[in-house]
Length: 530
Image (cartoon, rainbow, N blue to C red; front, side, top):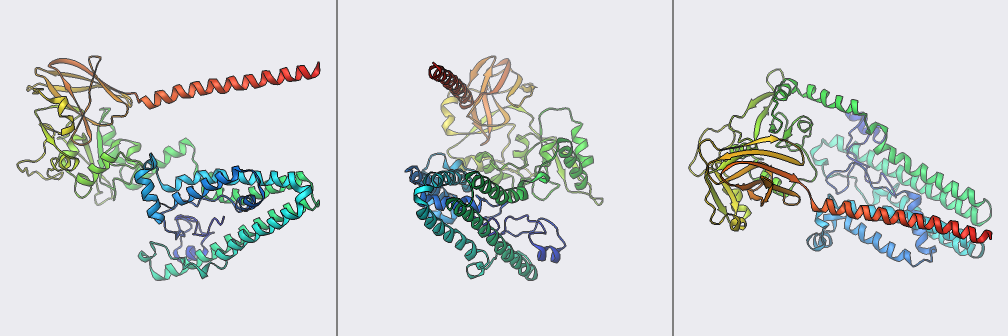
């Protein structure tokens, strides 16, 4: 109801924080947000008038549907608190199916964001229908709803210093002088935002009062409410998702080109881009955090990069072997062909080829069994990249595949091996389809430098489907009989195929209902004309 009560976001502009902008000489990226979330790109704002109509609707609307809508709104708001209501939300996280798949708890606010306006519409409809006989009762409830919402806006906005100190979680890392002006700007912004929300609610209440007192007609009421809701919501929306937040495709490509030049990576990137191999990975250590930087992924397949929803097993691998020091053998098994390193004296990044990269696939000599995930990760211990020392027992992915004991039944009695000329070679690369050629005089176990994911990937040897085994914690492996063979991997998730079928049937049913409704309408009109 008050969009800037908690400062708005971590990246506010100078017009929202004039004192901070003057003190820092910054016109944007000002850290005004001071709430309990670790960071925030923008508030979830329903609209002051929408909230007023929602509160009024709880008193005015007679439909029993408002109660389940209210229950859903309350439940979803509690769910959005996440760790700020830990006892409730951790219980849901552990027991509510699919809840742990949420990107963030605040995603659930989409439900009240939909239902608040629905109840608001029902409220206006109820006022229109009951105006002639319940005008006085409606006006009493308008005053109550107005007093509640305007009172909250005034109490938390201009009088917010009674409850808040406007101190953010990251303020301790800033200079005291800067924190002081930040807090002043936060308090000022909250006060202005609260007063503006109260003003919008007052205008909405005045429009409804004028309508029930026959001062204005229905079309003026509807147009006035619609206009004021737009005036309330659009500036906030435009501030966070305005035209400046979108770029045309040529400008988008230019951004990456300019960023590469700014970082001094152009020569190093150009060197690697000349490699015609369609499928290898790079590790970019030229920046501070390779796991929070998406720039290399625009040009290459990366060890790092950024994604808000990584596969959990891959994150485990990062935490265990690719965060504090980079396990050289793990990088090799991920087919890390090039490593970008920090700039020289001229600020230009360098590139180091990795001749030990395992390639896209290879045969192994043996399997080591692991009883648990922790043991599997522990068995992959090896020297960091650049360390030429070799300790007995170090992991060597070219010779050994580490496999969880749960896959033992697929390899029991299987005598694997490889000759000196054995190979598995990539012949065709695609996002959903991969082809390989293999040759080995012995029955072998081949490991592929692709992430194991059993929800859609299928493997075929000479057209015959074969089970995929999880190896080295994150990779795939399959059994390949002696001789020359064609190996294929295809990504065909059953959920996607079923979803398409359900969507097709649903579309046909909807179309059938539409046609039936139109035919029924014409028949009704024909009967009426007769």
